[in-house]
Length: 280
Image (tube, rainbow, N blue to C red; front, top):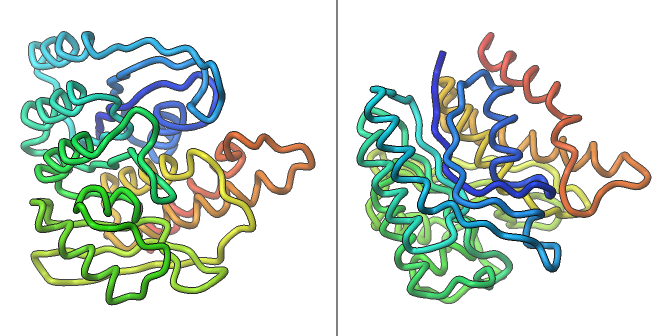
């Protein structure tokens, strides 16, 4: 059985970070070890949420794992809330990532702005973690901060390809931009593999509403697909289609939650799609 580590926070209500990563990776058939970096009563879309920092717990966890001789096929980082946590993620890669696929989702910005509490020096520090990853999966806002370039709402394919090349210049061999739209009604992901100088993309029909947490669902599904042996394109396709199905299931409900998508109801789709890929 394949094994993966994921390092990110726990939002007790809100359907993001570990509360989506753990069930999704488990459904894909991967034993999932978790490093919780903080516990929040809800995700940050809500006001007056509680927050308990777990940074000091990470080093003892890693030390215990090393003592036990654990090994993993993949290491996947999501939301990291401080400089110290980025450094601990680098330690995680050094200790358990030598023979594992290392995926970084640099969760720190969207819609042209950094999340509250983050600044440009933090983005530069996140770039250091991206440099030692095998694959990074930022959105265009995060890519802009990683590269110190202006965020552009309007762009063409040549621009996206240029951004992807610059992202791999950070040090990672593969970069994927998520949430890319060249035309109204279509959304997807665009990848660049530096070693083969190859671009890959996948787009599907855009659902009429966007929700918090879908980036975490995408990154978790994509990482799990790769660990289970899917090609880059198939893992991207699986992730895009599962996010779309999760939003679709949400919008089918008359009184759906606005703070997250019904990824649970879409899990049969995820498992069936993965099975079809494996049979193919």
